[in-house]
Image 1 (cartoon, rainbow, N blue to C red):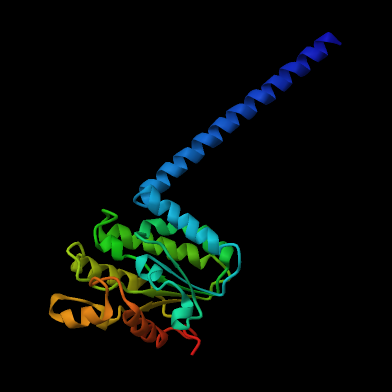
Image 2 (cartoon, rainbow, N blue to C red):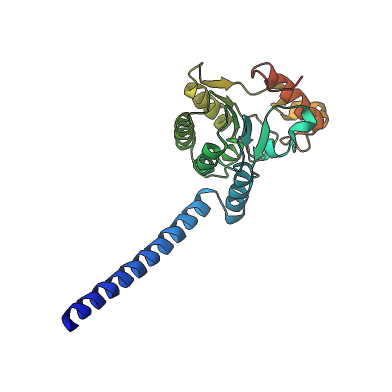
Length: 238
C-alpha cells in the first residue's frame, strides 16, 4: 500500500513539474511573439494600435472593409463620404504588419476587401527593399484568399507624395509588383489616382486637396472615393 502511494505521489509531482514547465514555455513563447511583433510593426505603439483597431472590428461580421495606413484612418468615418465600407486604418502601418491583420479579418468574415498599404514603406519606415515588401504583400494576399467569405480583394496603388522621405522609384516599382499580384478576377489592382500624385509643380492642387502633400483633406478624400467608386462596385451608397 505504501509503495503504491509513493508511486502515486511521484506521478503527481511529475505532472506538476510538467505543468510548470509548460507554463514557463508558454510565457516564453508569448514574450518572444510580442517582441517579434513589436519589431515587425516598427514600434510598440503601432503594434498596440493595430491590434486595438482590428480587434474592435472583429467582434461583428462586416460585409465590406477598407484597410490600410494613416491615409485610410484619416477618412475617419464612412458616413462622411456615404461609403458602404468600414474603414480600418492604422497610423504608421507598414506591409510587414499585415500578417497580424489576417486573424482579425478572418473573424470579421468580409465579402469584399480594399487594401491601401505601402506608403510608409516607400518613406523608408520598414527599412525593407521593394522586393521584400512585394513578397510580403503577395503572402498577405495569399493568406486572405484562404478566407472563404472573401469574394473580391481590391489592391490600390500607392500615391506619390510631396514628402522628403518618399522614394518615387520605390513607389513606381512597388505599384508594378502589386499590379502583378492581380488576377483580374478575385484580386483586382486599381491604379493610384493621378490627381493625388502630388509634386512641387502642383502646389495649388496640393493646397486644395491635401493637408501636407501626402495626407488628404475632405475634398481630397471626396474625389479619391469618387475615383475608386468607378472601379469598385457598391463602394458608395449613392
